[in-house]
Image 1: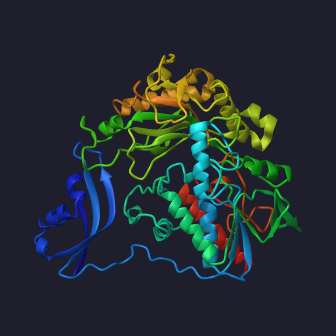
Image 2: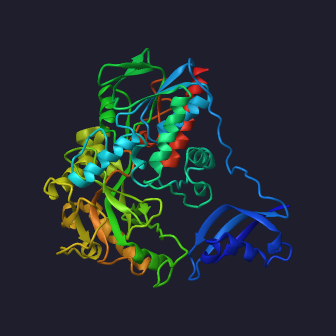
Image 3: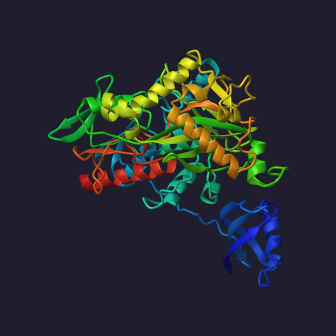
Length: 520
């Protein structure tokens, strides 16, 4: 007999299969001796009360052997050699999942990626960290895997109405990710594990007859009779087919190219602020209600804060427990930071973006000057100011959290995970006042809600600007192609229709399906 149960157990019990079986002995009809195997289907931590518990959904095999059943069945990708083709621009999650879905639908994907493959890209990311050398085409934002490959690989999303989250997670598992991502409430692969998964996805594309071209930057869309029929690259090479444009939120040259070509784009709201870094032990103590922190059986604690300040949201973003702050620069005259975590989330620090919501109408001067490119230019201006304040280096400006709130200089900065280094800087004075003031009030609110959170043991590091695309490339709601151009499918986070790895992957699949329907 197979039985599925919902359990609430201690962290110690949840950490051991033998302890879970012993717990089942409490059920009169499930003696431990009859349990032949257990599969965990879902797992989440409930830390709302002082006694932290783990919620488990389990499948129990009673008096029969445990079978190897897939939580999500693998996909059988078939060859597409000689089939009609489509061009996929960008190889982040939107582009990768679009390409794989095209193969399922019998279409050959031609994937064009401006950056390098994910392993060579690791070398370039290391050079940014250690030498301050930025390759504008290969960095934390550009290259195989997109911005998520080397900035954490978190897989939590609220975009469940647009497609199957489990399907996306299953494809990751099929390509080498741990099956735990199908189980955990907040799944996470880790920046140390995700590159191998991405490489395996590329190998599936190639094995099935698709093409992948690295260091191939698209500079022009080919338009004939109001329809996109292909692209041209910086070398003049052309690739034919309808186009899925999945270039990510930092491809400012692509936005400029579209704008200069008269292709409709729209200004979109963004969020900007800082990276906030605490010692992980403080976050563990707060979230798990214990001076002992997480103990032996709980993971590094996460948090999620949000409030309203002067009619705009102030919130935590991309929280990285046991992680590192990294330089997410893609231009040589700017400074922008992001966060990442390895799979074990084992560092001594916790960090998150702490950002303020901005709308185009909040920037009337920039909008009057730059039009729909106003939000993008504002991002650039903040990054360039941070770079100038850092002495035109990647040694980031930083301020102790309470000093930031109190409007005081920090004479020194606590140890940080940010490898290029941090230096004292009055972020509270040189950041835009409508950002700094809202952050200050937001921090005060978060400190009241979570005792110990507002502390000078924490550091704000500037600046965080790449939370989402500063433009939207508008598309037909039903057909998903651009509102004025058939054959062009704006996709994922860069097009303004997603906000992370999973939602971008889902959008990539939707665009592939729309393209296949239009081509049939």
